[in-house]
Amino acid sequence: MGFLKTILIILLIYYTLKLLARWFAPKLFNYAAKKTEDHFKKSFQQYQNYSQNGEEVNEGEVSIKKKTSPQKKVNTDNVGEFIDFEEIN
Image 1: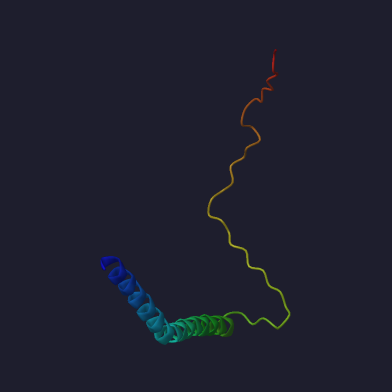
Image 2: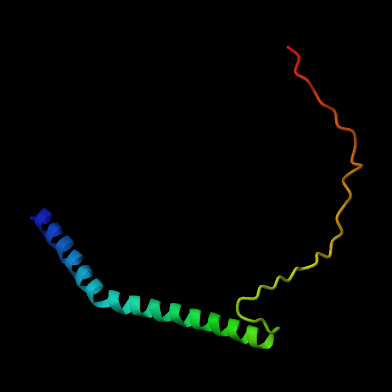
């Protein structure tokens, strides 16, 4: 009798979760879609504000901005002597 009762409880829980998922899954997906849409709108608006406030760039024109590094490169020409080792059998 205990085995049958356990099986019935498991089936009841399974179908209850299935029913709840059918009700709440569309609402959850709509919420995620709205959040993603808001994120993209915000990102696009920031890009639009940057391009309006920044330099004027015509459509199709390419501009490259390079950042200067504050560190100076170390001269590695005079590091030391290179010794080539050979394998001896």
